[in-house]
Length: 229
Image (cartoon, rainbow, N blue to C red; front, side, top):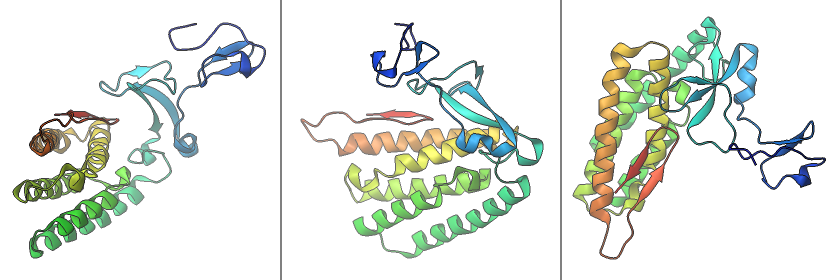
């Protein structure tokens, strides 16, 4: 068996002990990850290290430290799947910023409670689902909302379950900022990285404070980060 989990010889896929392997030309091979829509005909799919963004020659579906990403043509550079032009992406980002600002306004008008915090968590989760629609400004606003949610949850001594959905939100935000950095929009994107780190630290602190004697520590891993308490 090779280091990537593949084996030397096979006649049919059943000969492969690795459940993820395919029998290709007499060899058991674990397939590489694939890009969304094969980059929509406006780019090429490349493999990169998830931490350093250094390009790799392969990235099997079993590997956690690499990703398949699209290297888009210049007119589609802002789209992760090369399916929208830069103009279309920027229009979507402007609309999303309005949505995020409306959540900020709403949060300032409501009296905090567990139900309200749950509503905020749900709203920000939905608003950040599409990373292409998050500009750097939008990501910063989303981080402000997450900070408010965490701060309120701590003040009300709410359980970790009440804000658990925030980690998915943080992964979307972090992915969006990583794309902006990749596209050389570093002057504003880099300043958001420290904000991300601060919010993740606040989440870890809230998670730690939510633990009771006898409860196991919490550890969560996402594409862009890991959080432990």
